[in-house]
Image (cartoon, rainbow, N blue to C red; front, side, top):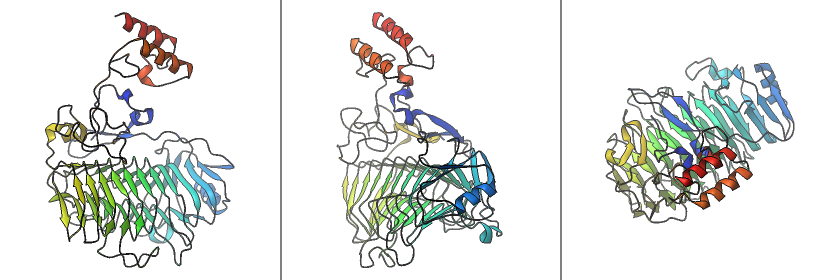
Length: 476
């Protein structure tokens, strides 16, 4: 499976959207997919503790003080207990190389009963402000690979470039503690992959499950086979409920999941700790520029909003290949919102007297409209019906790949924005090679740009020799 640019040279895109890494082979003969690569994080500030053994890692966490980064050297660390971060601020645990495959934190396995009492959770984040988990693989917890909770947070927790694989329940579980004085707000999950190698061990699982959280962002992530045992539906790949609010889920890929994105779960809020009297299970929030695909297994709806106030579902591509009766739903009589410019291969369903403003959605998508639907490449072909027919939306200025909207006369329906190919040497991309391209290249050389689009002679760097190459093109 792949989801990458088909718009001529990939260097038309920002650097961090065109650097891809091959990370998985899909079943049933599908091609390999290629993922977004996370830009490297800046070096840590403050004290750094470098660890290279399980004992050193567990000791560093147990004795951690605020402001400290634990840098984990390459290796597989078979944990003997939960790594608990509690009552500290501005702390981080990071893989030392930036390659998440180099550092593996492992439990006993999601089905190994011995792990229930030894390593039920890999990383626990209690009452922490500004926690970073980055550049590593987490696998094999009996319950959750990461659990965040507490009566005072966590606040501003961040997961970056993490591969979460094969856990017993939720990959990332977030909820408030008893009698909270603060809620688990303003979380950020970027460039992460949440995955089951095949299936979960039972129905009670999600990729990301957040209760009572406000201001969370999930972006540029992958959710792979978040599904229950054969014949049993798992929970949503992304679920925000119990009066969560202001959630953004964007530019993410959902592959063979039982459900995609869900805002609000119940017909009534019930046990919300943030606002027990609220009539909503989710408030505000945007679901935009995501690709949701399922063809190999059965499942349920791609996007669902339930007891949700002011939801915005914009520019998603939802292709379920008739594995369910509809693709997007809005449900319960106090739900409302906007559903605009989504591209699907099935109906958008109103349920239980919900209300929504539906604008410009296309629900009859055909394989022939895409670059490679069978290989999960849902970039649009230039003359397909979704191109240049959407209206401009204030809250949607880029597409799945981070390209600006519109790329043509008007925005395109769905997650992808089609761009005409640019000619080699058209540095400023105005469809003409002239003196202005020369000036643009001179400026790039002076600032030390390493954009491969400017490397006209293929030397691996941008320098005066590329300028000479452009002069040849100007003379041609």
